[in-house]
Every structure is written in structure tokens, then in C-alpha cells.
Length: 223
Ligand SMILES: Cc1ncc(C[n+]2csc(CCO)c2C)c(N)n1
Image (tube, rainbow, N blue to C red):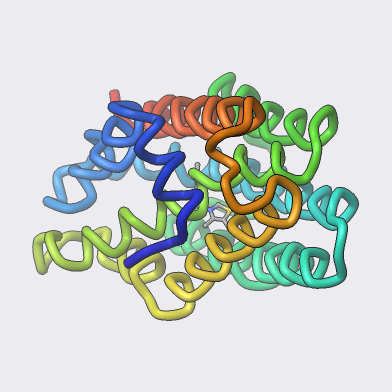
């Protein structure tokens, strides 16, 4: 599965941080079923707050966009996050005995603070491309993880629902669209050979930083 030209280049520039993210012990534990449930639940509770901030970050994308096409893509992601992913999270947590009140009351972990505020800050002080570079590892990394685990995971892993969500057609299509949005946005602002510009390295660095923050976030779920 290809998520576009910029993603392919930024992922390569992130070097070993990318593999640390998509092949993290947490991910491998979901694949073989050995990830302890308590760790997964701690991750889920933190992820609830994370998704609220990411909804805000995509909404900031609407503010920072230059064209209706870009605004529409960001608005569609905000809608999917708030009206599809958040209710799913609340349902999965509910099935585990975690009430919406408990989700609301949970204290935000430093790893969560660092990552979500880094992404929001990228958008506040930067432009649309800075924001997209900071947002990209989240969407496209989970797309890559879902697609791989759908092939490699143990048939009886208790994390099958999580894997199927991110491996599924709907989410994979959203990843292809996010990759295409990034490619279009970069081409419109930086032209056809963006790799030659100093700006490109700053975007690569932002992508790599967000990737490192994803690695730290998995740490919330493993002892
Ligand atoms: C720590 C963490 N990283 C990535 C995701 C996945 N994710 C978060 S928002 C979104 C949709 C558009 O950005 C997706 C796919 C997650 N749930 N938690």
C-alpha cells in the first residue's frame, strides 16, 4: 500500500525511529496476543484524550488551509474523528468497564501532553505543511501497522478488533486520501521538486519528531 510520495520520503528520513514506532513491543504484543490487558486499557484511556486533541488539530487544519479542497479534507477528518472514532473508543472502553466519566476524569500522561501539544503547536506557529507533517505519522503509521498485522497477527489474538479497524477498507482509503492531501498541499506550496528546498528538511524533522512521540506514547501501554 502506498500513501504517497512525501510520506515515503519522510518515513525514510525518520530512519530507525519509524521502525521503533511501527514495530514497537506494544504492536508486536497485539500481533501475538501477549500484550497484557492492563497495558492496553491504560493506552485506550490516554488515547481518548489524545483523539480529542487530534480532532482539534485537524480543525486547525481547516483554519490553516488555502483551498476549499484542503478545507473539505480536514473537515471530513474532524467529522470522522468526532462522530465515528470517538464513539467507537467509548464503546470499546465501556465493554471493558471503563465509563465515560472515568475517561473524562483520567489524568493526562506526560507522553500524551507532549505529543498532542507538539502537534497543535506545529499548527499554531507553523503553516498548513508544518501541521500536516506533524499529523502524518499518526494516520499513516496506524495504516501501515494495521495492514501488516492483518497479515501477520496470530488468528486468536484478543486484539483482532483493533487490527481489523485499522486494516479495514475504510481506514486504508482514508490513509490513501491523507497521503494524497499531503502531496497536493506540498506541490501547491513548494513546487515539483520540494526535496531541494531548505524547507523540506524542516518538514522531515517535524515528521521524525512526531514519530518519536508515537514511540513514547506506546510506552504508556507496556511496563
Ligand atoms: C497515539 C495514537 N496515534 C495514532 C492514532 C490513530 N489516529 C489518531 S487520529 C486518527 C485519524 C486522523 O488523524 C488516527 C488514525 C491513535 N488513535 N492514537
